[in-house]
Length: 573
Image (cartoon, rainbow, N blue to C red; front, side, top):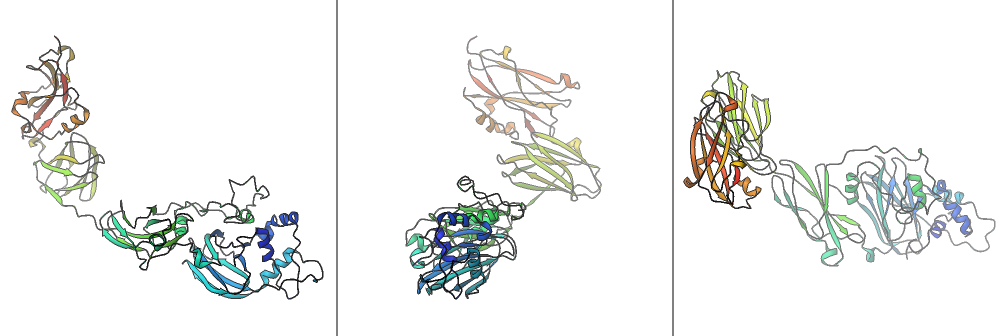
């Protein structure tokens, strides 16, 4: 025996509207035109609906406005199961039973009472309460043998506007619409890191035994665990109007759309009798920010690693098993865990006037500390970024003094303060690991870094190329420094990736082969316009490509490499 699933909607409504008074009544005349007119009367139907047998429906509740659903069980001793799923607010709901009147005989006298009067008789009839519940758990009523009668499900939300789901069936044993949970429904944390958590759970018998199509969905939240997947979906929505309007006849009756202000894009033309609702019927939906929650469905795997989490942060983890065909789902017993703390950074102590090598991981950070003599007047920082740019921040006794990106070599001079301590934070970039050299000193005249021009390119003179030589030039400074030039033969298809590997600006001439050295020389000029030198490199092979490097070495012995340059000799002279 079933409810109204196999019966047209209008017969369901006629069943629903059977008068429950003591005297015998006839059913309303089955006139199609009259029935269509009655179903258009939204004021008549707006707070009641018929539950289909064996199909989950979704609906919406305004705060403090109860909603009623009805269904008929036609025979005694019928199995019955009713499941109510709150989505994002606690619900109060109760199931009650009213006996069906005996079938009217043909001898009944008088015309049938108006439909609205018959409906009012139903509403006024209290019936016998079978079950009630208050809370936000997925709760159900189940009976292996229920009496015939008209069943009424009444729901109320006292907290806020919300939506919910209802499923009812008279064949609970064979339906099994919700996937089953294993005997141990817990979600276990099998691995815990600073930014990752690995979860595992036992497979659902629906998949392992019944071989039905299922998928698992993992939900991560920083607020709390969730008891249903629709509660997750409600939280993920951008505002309070988080339901897409279902199609009439499936999840809602047509009159529900007009009452709740939903518009059906796919069927607006088919249901043109649904007039636009008055603004007074709906409530304004205030937009709200996206919740701090993530959902990912992973197929039928029962182990999953959540990544990109924040260190030392508590997270709540839920797993839902969903029927792939019907999308009806069941919640495992969720868990929570706190990710591990970030490893405490070891602070490197800088010594006055001494160069320190620093390696920073991709997206990582390093901390350095400089404690100069208490009576210092100023502090100079020299930073030599060997590869890509690196960010430097300098704080004096907690106060931020400097925050800049450094590419190549830079010098920063800060005003000193008696007994002050300096904390330097170096942050790597997203492209890759960073290498750099840093020097802090209160005596910049004795620093180890050579003075450098702003333009550290090597210029090649194309017109001076021969089959065995090339002529190049580079800039110097007002300080007398030692410059060494090196050459290395490379392939004609020498590309940018290979060039980038050669661009570690911190590698000195001591890493080069002696055979690659061309010459070393000193030069400077008090006139910066004339601080330029040229050099002709001889003994090269015709039609060959060469990588040229110029190194400048300061008084302290620290070397800096200019930008590399690829040159090619002429093939024919």
